[in-house]
Image 1 (tube, rainbow, N blue to C red):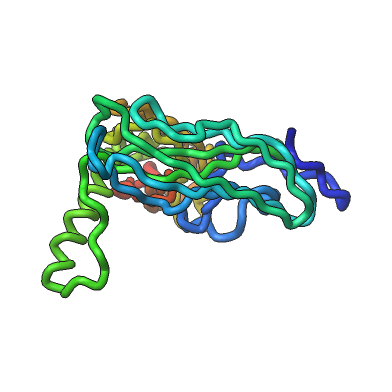
Image 2: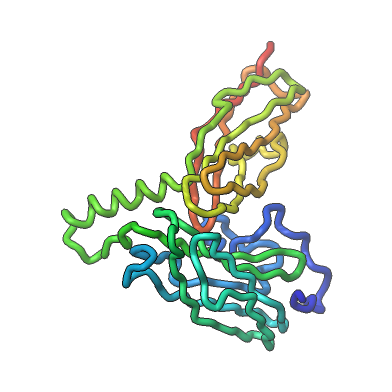
Length: 276
């Protein structure tokens, strides 16, 4: 069950994009999500490397923690390792916390026989206060671990650059509407295609970013998305020009994509008010 409602008033409405990523600061979102994350779930470390099934380095350790604020909380953590990794224990894992309490578990993650090489995600979820809270750890199979930062710079830089290129390749972004021309009172759409190149389902949030003064013209301003391994999904936002918009007005808009502690930005779309 969800944690009891605090006694000081009604709960705020939930975040529009679910699940809520509990390490929200990695998404550059500023203040904490609605409700201030009354119960948090974390997996650490956030990144692991497995040599592959059957190898001596074919397993690694994860630490799972759940913590609450000033209200007690109880429920269960749902774990998801996808179909190619195995977690022990597999969950669900029950917790019953006093105010300001926490619980932790040591997990082992292994690659199953035939596991696809590349990047997988292990996730942990809890439900409470009308929202779903989630954290994720990236588990690479058959890829090297991230380079040690104490290497000499001439050795570190090419390794770091290659690692960043693999990170950028996890989710491919293609802006389908680079230009939008609208008359006063007109409506149009901005579309972004996402292709998931990882070996796991990816869940995230796509937020349209534009200059102050244009926000009222955009709907929705943010939305959740889910992309299966190897699949493409398209997220769309509607731009509605005000009837009083001045012909010749011009601004930009781009899509900020956030998932599992990563942040990506699309190319900007050009928006112009026509007529006059």
